[in-house]
Length: 270
Image 1 (tube, rainbow, N blue to C red):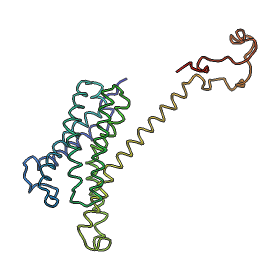
Image 2 (cartoon, rainbow, N blue to C red):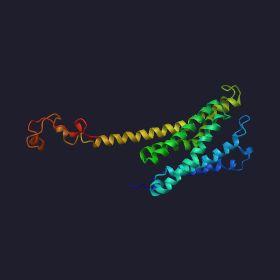
Image 3 (cartoon, helix red, strand yellow):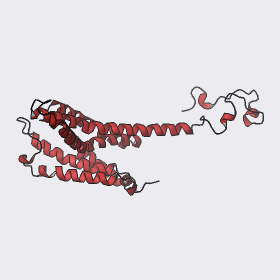
Image 4 (cartoon, rainbow, N blue to C red):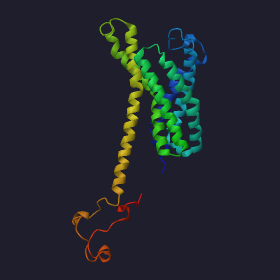
């Protein structure tokens, strides 16, 4: 049974949030004007700005197509559109954006903690996406969905990163003259490091919890459907009591010993 699109209340807010984020983040880099960059160039790495601009463009493609990919109604209503958007997401979004994220993350001007978080996130982003694409090609759709949800969590983490940056700035700025000894550089690196790690680790952990919760529910449902699970009225008779004389098994097995099922024999069964 398909769920109507309006019964997914998170879809519209997520779509609006993504559109607003792209509308704010993308335009300054389309002009290729270094003066409009929101990230300072680290040292003498002249390649940093072109790589950053390309990363923003490919990342925008990834985040826009990501919304379509995780929208259940679109996936069920337009499976061909889902596959096409998926290819754009992988090859026109995540793969180039992920490679560039690793490169620019390694020379981030916001300190070593931020650098480590960006590089690790970029590598996981690439790994999750490639694994999900391979599972889809092999028609292992359950695994495909799991890996792509992990990939989507990292894709959308760039938005949560901004919220954490605002929160940590508000929390740590009063400590500028105490904890950070008046160093605005130290404060900036602390804010960037915390926001960079929390921005993707927390969404990733949430997705893992959500997947495990669903798996546990399915395991309980399967266990309840097993042939050997207790049935109604089974408490009225001990499990080791022999069958009654008028039961079919008693007529076929006069000795009253439990019969050996095919699955219990060596080499038989699944």
